[in-house]
Image (cartoon, rainbow, N blue to C red; front, side):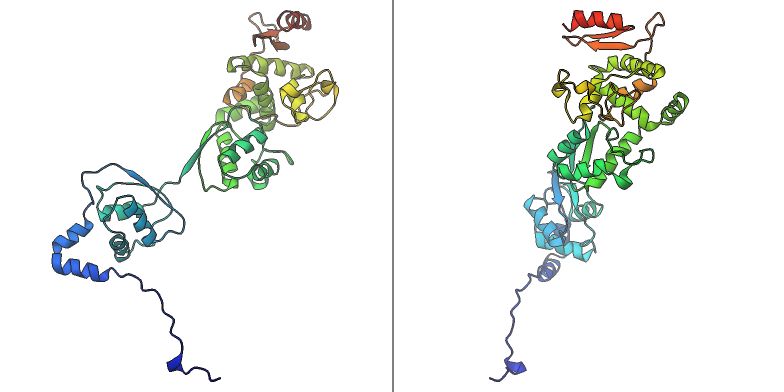
Length: 351
């Protein structure tokens, strides 16, 4: 069988692209200046209500023009797309959110789009006292990445770790509790970096001076603040709780903070089983079996807890040092000076 000659070669038919040049020429020829003005004028000069338009990654001039027409912002998608090409802005428009109205002229719309949009944000609130697993779950609920991805970054932060973080430590304590407006297309690394930077804002010059004067490293400061955060029922209690723990540290007395024991077992406080001997089972966070601070923070403390560690209320009005405290059945807060007083309050407010 003979191969087809060039003149007999099959012809591939390509779909014709619609050209708007003829229409533009007709407008110019028939309407002249008036036609151009009509083309460039607002669709509705009286409608100033803003519409939010989202330009997605990969959208070109034609797709953007179609979206504008669908939102009732322009007369004709093809003409607007052609205008962008004529003025050289067809490749200048990036992804993002844009506030546009039908009262904008074609040049105004084009300039606004070329100026760049704002990112779509998701608002995420991290409460004080959240553990890293809680933070990971909250971020995952917002659709920013899955829990496993965030936990991998929290437990092995690598380049995301602040300079004061000890080797092998996690980011527990350094994911600052706050409300974050996060671009939905952020990488998990960018989200974590944002939260660590927010913590670093708490390290003011005044705070650094106080840490140095009081002999605290940043890490020890955060560890103690995380315990205060977990023990306190209200911000007003935090200075006294911090005072109790600092007084105990000064005399080599175990902190005996139940939340540290629960954390080391991966439990929540209601799961702590005192009768089964949890308080006696040693681990690096058990402040009953070990003197001093535990291995690391047990939660992510907020500003009141952090500041209470640097400004503790160690004494009562008579200058006597607090060494004990408890929360009663009705959450009443009872600081005590001696074990005898503490045991008396246990009988009165807990039994």
